[in-house]
Image: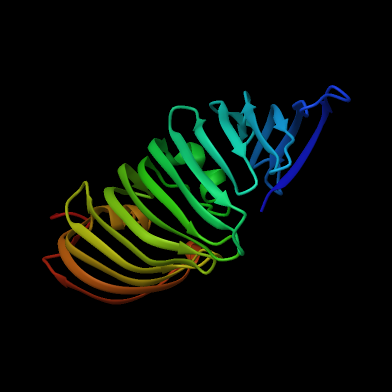
Length: 272
């Protein structure tokens, strides 16, 4: 959800044939329901060309001081074009890390999406208010990859393919590939395949709902228990290598786990 406001002006020459372009200029604000999460003050300027065959136009939208959690981030800029059949954008950039191009064909019923968003070494901890505003435990890492949006305006869907490098969640250091299909009912399927920096591989297969509830199966191979003990706040070290198959479900902040671990030996508190 987002709130949008815009005020501006338009001017044109009267009684000219053929019709002269209409110039537009103004400023606005696009923000989250809680302005403390993110806030995008922007300027919009462009030109509309009246025509008997359908009006066309182009505009440039720019934001020099976007805010995430009241912290200024890199500028945003996009070139927007439209005609009687579609609206499309090119050269959309949010700083050095986000790029996008795409279109919405509004001569179709319902209108059709065709768009792509690219991420290039996006720092998760900086962009968390926009990506996962309700998440309390903020993951860290560098996100790169692509999201392809298709479908209709009423039933959009998208395929995502990302890689997270130098990831950190609680005491777990990791890298992982992330793939899935997004829709109005969440991300299903959602697949993560990665490796822990302390040793071991993991694979998650399941889904994530719009309410940030997860469900699926997690498989661990050669998993080092040390970061698990640190994450749970054990007063002494937990050591050992194990394998596991676990099922999980529930809100991300309160996941319920079931399953079994095998391996060993498992040592708590050191050899002494």
